[in-house]
Length: 112
Image (cartoon, rainbow, N blue to C red; front, side):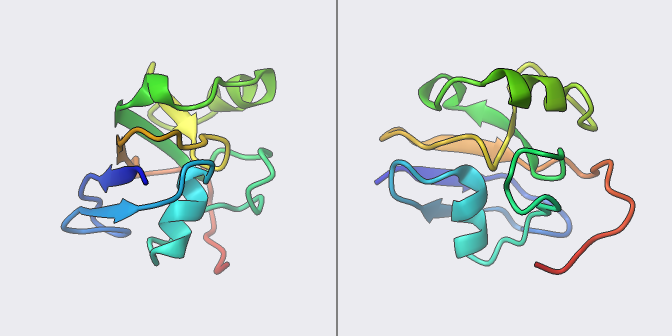
């Protein structure tokens, strides 16, 4: 079972943490399952960028980006070469390290 190392984020995970999640799970699902309430305004349907993360280690072990995700990422705040939408990034058997950007383009948070 892969481990996700989440780097500290002032709101979602102030001290950082490590969580285990089954291969085949998206990063977003894994975070939510462990009460790390990352934004996901489109309910994980790949229609926004609020669940944007930067994969600091293990980027190459995730599934490939599709065209829809690539197009949406162009709108994400703080886009980097190893950015992914966490609702589309599927874990393999390898560990990953992710950073949740401090901001999103979302103007109002919703409680999911």
